[in-house]
Image 1 (cartoon, rainbow, N blue to C red):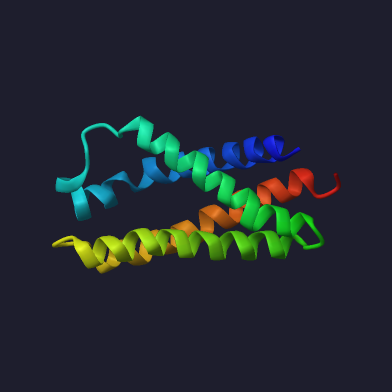
Image 2: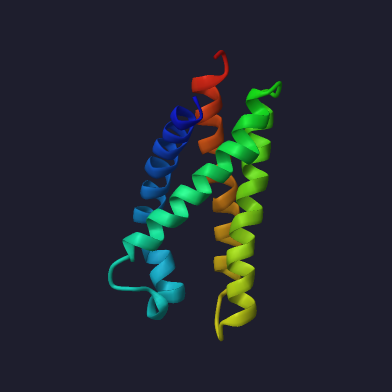
Length: 129
């Protein structure tokens, strides 16, 4: 069952995040264009997605399915997303010469929304199983 939950959350996450990344590409390019690789390093991307989706299932979806509601799914997912994306952005801001505040705010809000919605998708599929 956990593997199916992982796959459902991963599918939701991938669809939502790919739309975001396509729409927001000009935003990221304008803020950190010099830091962006010409092409993403797929191995690192896959490692991130596998670890992060496992985290969503373990820390957000499972608690929501174990007696929570859709609000639990969204809330735990959003909290996890905000913490994870804040860790990335605030570490970059602390260690890099430039990491814009606007990017930090947008990324943290996006992490919360993306993770909350992905957790909700998993909860909607598995809530009655």
